[in-house]
Length: 386
Image (cartoon, rainbow, N blue to C red; front, side, top):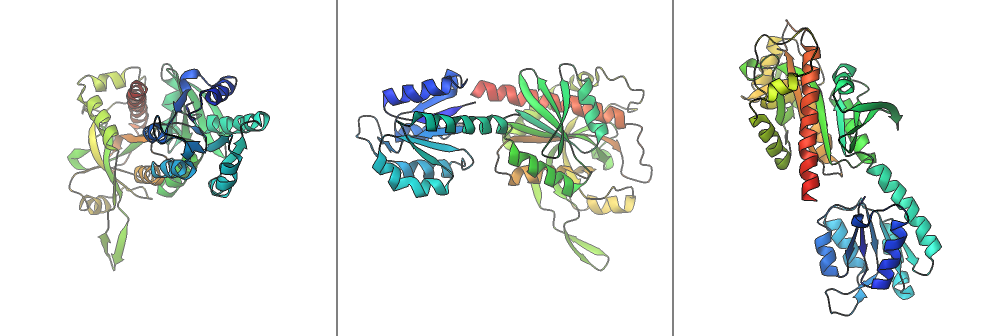
């Protein structure tokens, strides 16, 4: 947990810092800004709680002045409206001046001499922040078959729990905490609603979707792992008689995440590494290297060559088709969070009349292994940068 303390008075900062450390906040998790200029740089970093004073110097060597409005504006403009703020001040007149504006944002103002009060308030804020930051990563699976391999992956011990009506498998992975969420049903709507609901409660660093999908033409071969590059909903648009006029609004994965995925896919030994440990009997007849792919999603399972051709006409490079990926990425895009996000599914059928389930176990296993590999790379990079 990281807490930003906006305080220029050394004695008062030590009081707040010691109080936070007594609540098991690590010293390196307390970040100080002593001027408005320092705070402007600080808001670019990630933190879970902000403790501020109402009077601060704009820069070093300048006399303190009222800075309440500036602080709130900087937090809001930097996309940190969801970060809780508590004000601890020795200036009673400033407290009355800003009390209504701060209250409208859900921020409480305390007199520094009332330590018992603001210490209790910190307890509540810290508890809420710890729950919100319970998970470093969250994985979504549409069916139990897709989640099952995570219980067999080395180093991943899962615990089945239900939180806020959502089915979780909580786990610890190499020092990071995470969970694998199982959707209550397959489909775009359930995927969007579940992802939005989960991200309203938690602030993970990375979210991912795992599973299996259909492949289209020679761009999505049986047994091939496809990592989403661009996705859209093939059902959007307007029907004129028997003709659909498509409006394929697209979502792309974040640029930084895409770079991580491309680096992973450069590894020529990636597929054998993903297959290692797989004990199932069915495997694809031909090995095809994993790749980035264009995905289209819809609410119904497609097992028709005619319907598939209509989807192909919407994007000449479409490789995969499923029921959840677009809903997942769109919900992440619209959330108040800004996590890195990706999805990876293995082609187990060609979405035509010959649709079968022989490769389901293989596809679920390989996809799960890749998702954990991607999460590891992203979190390691995040740890190094912080």
